[in-house]
Image (cartoon, rainbow, N blue to C red; front, side, top):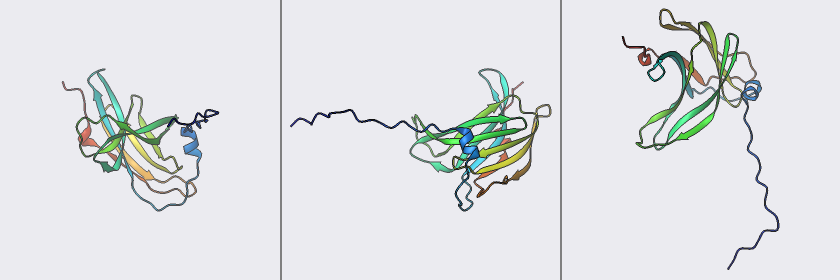
Length: 171
């Protein structure tokens, strides 16, 4: 039995475009504190382009078993402030399953001195830390972690310097 022919083609709604600035300006709903992410600062040397970078890696506390995920992060830079807006998860091809967290490394060449790093969730929550980046001495220092003044702001991210992941040019 054939299917009935439709008189008109149904309209498919357009997907909502998420904007980083909208997440920064949003006021979150009141929720309890729960650490979901870890923001790691580290030095990363890329062998392919022979360049030294500072990597700000955001990874989930939860580890995924069946699928491999990557966080999608948008970056907004404003003088001495750097906003890393977590936009969501994206599935990656998984050839050999392993237990690992979702992670995104954002590479920067020009971070020098005291920089405030703000990690922002889609609901509008912001967690911040002040790092000191010293490229000459190859040293990163976490100065302070704090929650910015914002209505219903909550703790969801921890900050650290991941010295065990540092990589430099081998001479």
